[in-house]
Image (cartoon, rainbow, N blue to C red; front, top):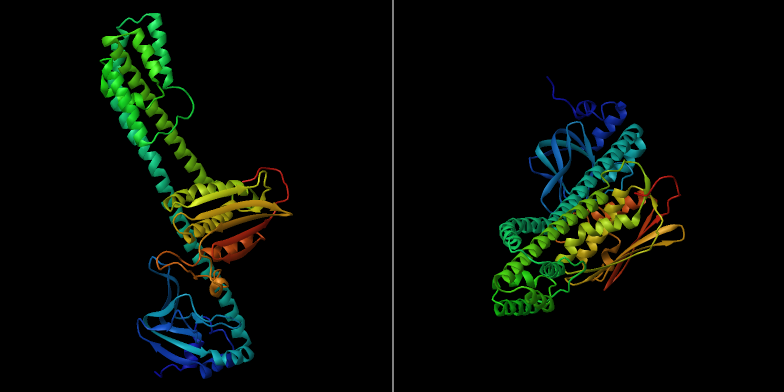
Length: 470
């Protein structure tokens, strides 16, 4: 049996097989058959793309380094085409295109592409459709990657934020359980003491000092220690248990109240009353801490739910920008606190809604604010403001970082371009931001100089309709 000619192999190709014979012969005449060993790089990340590659056998893949390691985003096998397509402006791929196994490709080099477009009309039409499909796959792939990156940041921030209140609940619950036996003993002793009405009234007055609403002044560690020492001295003078000094020091009980209590009861009765007051106040304090911590968890869950818009249908609707920015800031609060970055927020009251997808716009705010936090040094400043400007809403994210150099300013919205160190950035965030803003018929502008970088997103105001903003 004779060896198949290149024309025969091209005629059996899944994409080229239906072409007129003269176009297949043109490709066979101008194309160069290349054999690649496993691991051979057909097109390096830095380019250039040499031309159109028609895969006859084997397996090719493109890998992109997203910081956390290489990831395959597309592959081609026998019957596929890759490389430069007609009318494409592709210069270099986002990653290395390499052979996964011994492979054969026919390359029509860049210099012959113009002639191919003139001479091979049907092939050109097919390849344009392939190019559109390839762009769709690339877009879908790095949109997915960016969502995973955003999800990772969200999860890290949420875990950090939830750790404090959940730890507080566990700690307070443990202390509360330990406090109950002492409270039971003090309650029984006090109940059997047979207090008269005057003593009961004074006891209740002192007890109410630790239940008083309002915010107690925050004492420095030294001031708190001094207060504990003073109360311990008072207890020692009145032959009461000094061990309860710390508990009483955490309340708003004054020495005047303690003196009034000491005038109404003495000896073991005073000691019993003070022990009961101390344990009662401690239990109520711990209960309040648990309530506050659980409320904080509810607030965080509500903020994340609002940030992701997971309870919304995938249809455009009026979007409350203020609520979206507030939820986003709640999610990123731990990062700001970790760098001691000051975040100032100025959101116009009664800001009109915009029309679109709340979750997607929150992704815009998340990327811009997260980048601003990355840009500033420890102790830096980030400013977020939103206000109406005629028929649009303008959201500005400003940082006092070093600024974006002029030589790269035109590239920051390009996919896979990043100024962050390896492992800290995918180069997808700002490209996603640009795409999502355009999807909402908006615009994004950049002004940057050392000490001030401003991203401004403007979105058209939603036409009022029935219903509420998301």
